[in-house]
Image 1: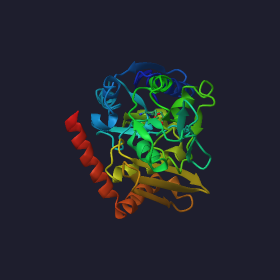
Image 2: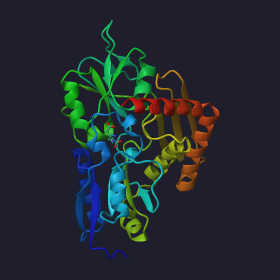
Image 3: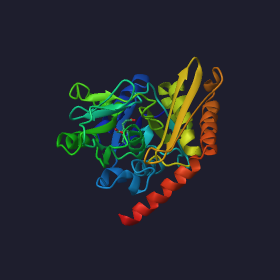
Length: 334
Ligand SMILES: NCc1[nH]cc(CCC(=O)O)c1CC(=O)O
């Protein structure tokens, strides 16, 4: 039985983070109408340091560390995150629940001119003799776009979604790549009509957890009970498989590792990718659970681990080690 009267939700202050938080608050209120919910905005390292690519700041958790401290110190009770920003292992005493439904998992090309993604997933509309300039800071997107278009010039792009769109308008890029989920939640499809083309998942495999939210709490029965009605078994199974794939590879969230799981015919199907930054070497693997096996979370997690081991057996370790090495060198030059 819930006896709480008031809880505090912690979040980043960005427009997207606030929309996500408001949505979660509405969902909690539907279940627990009397509960008073306060919001605490927390500034993270990722919000403060906007001029350096995330892959150089030091990888994991740049958008969450301060928020996790607030949870551990009991200044907040629930943290609302974009699941893909959340490291795959939680600090002592914290756990993550995943509400549904999951937004669109795909990445989108937002174009200033003719560049677009065809239905087959190829990059079209390139001006002959000129390398398309594409903005992204994600190594996962960089490697996959280089695979699709080895001539593309990849330019660094950081900031929240509005900032990125402003930089595109300013003419620094021919196109930029964003997560569909962020654009949809910010209700930007209308404004960007005619400029958007969606990558098929197979051509731009998403980040583990992309499109899903993660609710982080102290692992206590009262908060588990409070959020239980929001949980979605299928989203939980799919994202757990994706995140375990990443975790077993020992890859931080800013390495070119991608994973996507979905349910077909009552089986959980997981696809994973480990790729070199130039997009030349790719280890693309797929595995599925038995019929209805994903009903047990352990099976979804085991699927992620098994697929990672398949990728490692095919040489994923070498690619990751190489990338880790080059990142350390880059950091020394910052
Ligand atoms: N680190 C950026 C980030 N984290 C979560 C989202 C929104 C999409 C999502 O929830 O997966 C974005 C923006 C983007 O990648 O374009």
